[in-house]
Length: 187
Image (cartoon, rainbow, N blue to C red; front, side, top):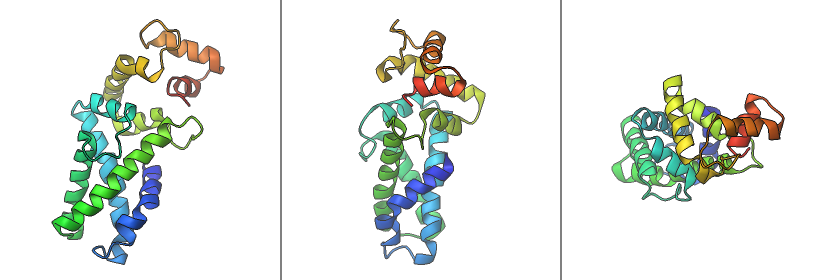
């Protein structure tokens, strides 16, 4: 997932980073890489602090590119701090870069994860990558169970998302763990 975040940062970094006179050209690649790292580490931190509901809300909503989204604000502030510390950018320059780049990357990440025709990002892969350990995976799976109906994951329409939905997905898709996640997460 980290490589894919770097690709998204490179896609969106042209205006915010490459064409920005406040960032020396020799630092462009490092700043773009820092944006990816900042998002990845920030999402891990949010999960570890019990922010599964925030993450679920981000994937569910359409406000990922909105700076008023609390999760986007956290990630933007974290990146802004890194820009000041690691690259010596002024407060204003760091705010501008972070405020433009982070929402664009997050929005693209979520749009790709939700797009059934784009297999480059799978929600299950994102969850696995940012949760990092089985304890967090169970917390995330609990959130999926809680919010799954809103995502259309209730395969057997019994009002809850559970192993029966996974089995229904296997039956409909033809089996395999990838198929389970694929069906449950709309891929």
